Length: 363
Image (cartoon, helix red, strand yellow):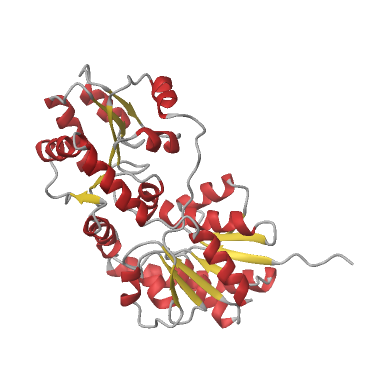
């Protein structure tokens, strides 16, 4: 008689900082379980999850925070519908447990699981837990946090474990000189990697544009990911401006670029910070000001207080300030090394394994 295949659900969506930790957990459990991801087909999770070959169960989950009164009513309706769909999926596939990765998607799935007596586990990547995590932490079997400060914001703490950020270092198999040679970068150049996420960051891009036009020292090489939405406009604005650097809509070989970068200028999402810690990189962080509960600023300040980054508020960023901070850091190798070392201390390379082992032990 064939043994019934055990299944699990991973509720994940919204941003890469929530989706990729779910994929890393799935990678470690796919040999033992049939894995279904639950999310919104209109969210970025759908394309990413399908690309990795996992089954996808759609629900119309919809965020609540920062919405207009009408949008909040819509959110309540959509999430109640998501609850009903989640209960139906649980009845159909009988998961052993569900894992939520911190996005609003986990809320209806988590409550459906609780109603149907299925164990619930939550991971939270941000320093400020979102409303979904705060609510589900009250009923979850276990909550895994990236930051010790996050636990103080939860009403229930007896089910909390601090395990660090769930991430993974990708080995590139090339030396720094090999990567630089392939990109046409001369040895001895100081490399600044600038990116504002896959969709870009207008204020940051504007400051970088003006900074480059004003002129940078000849030994600074800028690798600049503008975001696909902003690339054509920026290329047009830069025109024939000559500088040492590359302008790209999107960087597909991130591990290679992180490997050669001396300094990173970026947003402060959970996924980005995990990568900075993975590769032990010093950073100038420009948090996205409209993130829910301003959690990117809280993430950034956490890194700044631990000597891993410098923070520039988007309201204050301009070409002169950005250039000043870059030059102040890029020529101070000891400072860069210390910041990179401090960033590395915030990384737990075994976080994903810790979560999986803890869940399986409790079964």
